[in-house]
Image (tube, rainbow, N blue to C red; front, top):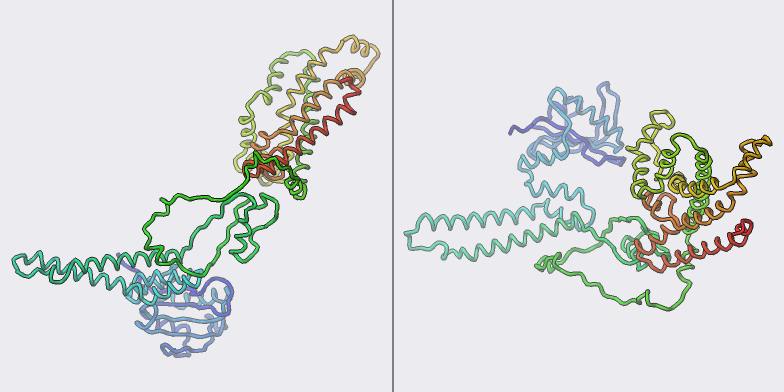
Length: 541
């Protein structure tokens, strides 16, 4: 393997704005580079020189300090030139470009990430443990992690490793002497207490492993998950540990629905007793203790769940989504069914095939048709979006089931499309039972098709339309599977039935779910009473 020893240069400070920025160059001989950059000045090794940094045409880029370290008394073990100026990104890029331009004839190139430290390791300025400690010190997120990395960088960890290596080599010499000279009366192993030395090496090595594990813990941290029943204080505990309001805390169960992540620094380190404990964490069986009432047998009546329900801002959004979905879904299914019945109220060729197409949405499995819609309207691979983009209707894909209020409109359209066949069958059966003599008389009087529908067909259909409206309203109000399969209740499509499922099963808040179910019952009772009180009376139902 041939290593690249050409001179290198790079910005040595972190990206972004700062008071000071450093451009560093390293190579076996940087004398020509320094003469090109500063022809009128002479840099003294290990002394700071305040000097202007100029471009090729003599214009001043910046003014700052130039530091020259002669090999081997430098970080990399090579000649090192550091230009310290103002920490603006544009200024540093201009200064780096000037340095690369000045050293192009001498093979100067842009350094790779971590190459300065790699050269320090290759030139025996740092060992491997110290080189890794440099990255750990840069990435340290806590004071304890920074102190641990500093100790490793100073060589404390390397000294322990070197000592272990020497002890192991000495022990190997004793073993080889015993094997090479078996005829000698001296037992080198027994005389040198080889077994005791081996035990000491093993203990020291285990101590090193424990230190390395603790160092990894300080460097990488731990992933802790807060899990518990709703309203037990998980968000409050997270805010207390973080020292900030990272999670919303309300008395309403299920306020925190999405994952909340936060990096928390807690002073202290893991004790040595933890590492001395040989118990595997995976073998420990978690134990949950506590007391609670069995809510299924609790006879105490309370309005607490209802109070929390009506105080929630999301609840009224759920009510609105439910009413929109139910009203427009019901009326739309009746109107489309009525239109389809009017088309098939006359005999023509292919009538049976068309009727079969009408019935397909209703008889097909809900899972099949729901996922077909999801695939067709997918914003990334859906055929509908591809067609709209190719036709120039839209410039980008539309997330039909993921944007407000489009998602609610789409699930309503799906409800109309899927359940209009039921209305179609009932309406068509009623239309075919109407006496045709009235239509013949109307034709003789010169009535138009619209007049025949308005004055003859519609009065005859009001009874079946009222019944269908009642049934479809109740069924749509209780609809769950269609919405859950299409959107999962997201993007403003969470109806009351979906809310029952989320509260009772996803959040394990059976009380809140039961309260929503009671609201559904009361809404349907109120609608049924109003229907039979005012509407159905006119139809003789």
